[in-house]
Length: 450
Image 1 (cartoon, rainbow, N blue to C red):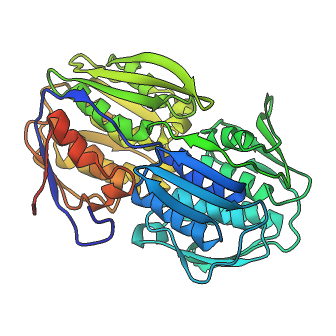
Image 2: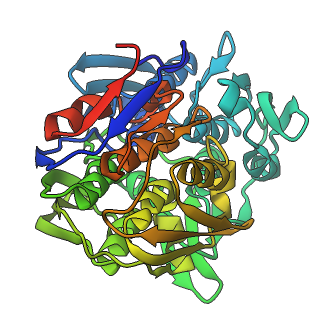
Image 3: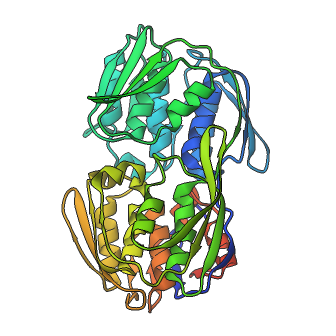
């Protein structure tokens, strides 16, 4: 699929049973961070299992622009010859991140404490997303930002010539903001201190420790306090990227709603700051089990088995769980449609500043397919109709959002009438084999122009 070419309409219709093993791509969050930290280490980092979706490829391209040597060695096998902390050079041209909010925000942080200037841009979706949540904290280090009104791309960052250490309390639960500040702190003197009132995914902290940074994490009365000592010499690593739990969500959720399904998704990362969806599905009565639980590369991993679950019930998802499953709420709302009763989701305002306003986008998509949805600024409720009573039949806009596109395709696999989307092209940004993998399991999903 082309990420930024002509629209690719797609259709999914009632499927099942879905049977087999779903080998989903590598974890996107860990893939981004592997490339960035590899670029900030001295020596050659080996990465196996890298997600080769467009978002991650754009991060690889950006690391080359800042001076690292990034090379594809084979299928999902990459190497990064790093330039060391403080070693970034000034890009010669615009740095284009396509659709990747994670890539642009993390690298804005990483370069903010270098005495260089870089101009960042992206596709129409990314240019509409706010960047002030990153430019505000990096300004504390001494960096300055010049962008469009509302703090939007294109944006030029002038890095701090003489950065200072920062103590920063993250105002919203955001792993991107936390990670950007930590990456900036690597090239600042003294200690950079971050306070999180609500814990978010901790891949950056784990990986910084693995690369040799002096980092300490403490749970205190004011929240999670992360202390990073500046100017470390990061050592290159060999990284095996676990499979992505956010990508695993799609075949798992499809199996739950397609009669007779039994799908195994091997080697899934179960970091507790990422696994909220799976906990929620089990709370709803989903037949979802963990097999072969283990630790790999400091991250908990297991094989997940999902079976058709006709008796799921709506629940109120604990708001404190939102940070651990924020990207999975769109596909959770699909499962909620096939459960009995209301599923209530609160504390989810972060969904409004993703690739699209995901609350509005999914509410419109579900309503177009006969579902009742209520929502506000920070919450939404789906009235489930049960496993065999979701009408379907709608044509839905994806708003250049890969997760909206995939979630609505999962809806079509269980609904009574086919579901159509206007553009499946953005799926390539995070899950380039989605269509092929789902078809191999037995799903009926296709491109209308093929």
